[in-house]
Amino acid sequence: MATPPNPFALGLKGLRRPTPKRIYRFRRRVKRLRAYLALYAFPAPPPTCSALDALFKAAGKLRQLHLIHDQVQQICADLQKKSKKELRKKEEKFIQSYKGNRKEAARCVKNWKQKFPPPWTNGGREKAWERQGKRWLQAKRTQLVSFPETPDTPHVWHDLRRFLRQWELAGKWVPLSPLPPAELTQALGETRDLHLLLRWLQKQGAPPKCQSPVIEAFRRKEEEALRQWQEWRSSWV
Image (cartoon, rainbow, N blue to C red; front, side, top):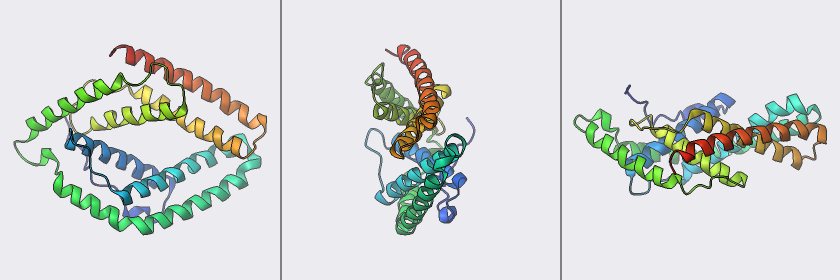
């Protein structure tokens, strides 16, 4: 296995300018760090940091508006001004969150780096780390069957995606086999994005001609995600 990336490199300083690319990278790195901590601390619960959680949440809302604004320009030009106005508000709120939480978030990450040092940087701990990975993976397999064969709400779909993404990202820190299919987590992510876009359009009172293509795309993607989920789940149950 190649040398894993540094789990504690979040790029906090770069968020002074919250561009779409930087926001996306930050959220991905936080998810990756959370997977590392969950794996490391198991069977105890992973540590948390309210400042980092708040910043991550604010970044998530901004990320949603980035995606919505891009889509609205293509499917409903009449709502571009509204999406742009909301995007500016979300950027302002993110900057406020950044100013209020960055230092504390950085302190949390620094403390975690000392308390949970990467095992591959300390000679002789690789085997113990692999055993830890096997124990963690077994727990994930047990949890997997608790998810319904046919998720019936967007909330359940979202919980499933977060569960599988943590499993997938943990594979960056220790060999885990098998990992969730990348096609499944991708389909779940696209389904989530379409759900949020449709919810925003409905909130804005978008005309049917704007909602219809999104509804159809959402149904197709949900069907694809369901098929892939049921196929993969059936190999475990």
